[in-house]
Length: 87
Image (cartoon, rainbow, N blue to C red; front, top):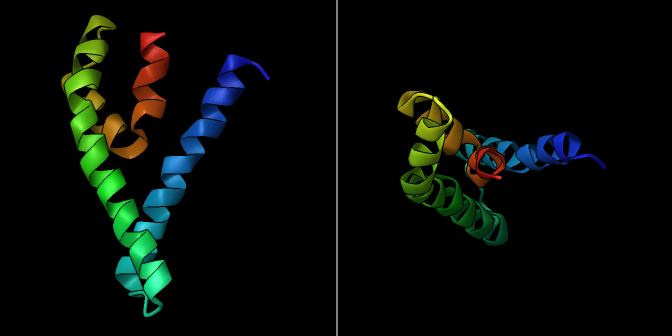
């Protein structure tokens, strides 16, 4: 598998996470297991992606990518967006 295909496949993971969050907002989970998974997903998608901004913005600036785009892309895709820029 080439690097571009691998990076594309890895970007699917956070998209699935965001979809799960939206589903949990629209249809709150009554099952404790799915609710706990939802909470963990929210913490990872929001919290961890926000922390990654400290790394992604400087990397994006070195590649002449705006801070605004870096923020949007990092919050959506996390490290699957900025790590390939770094490599």
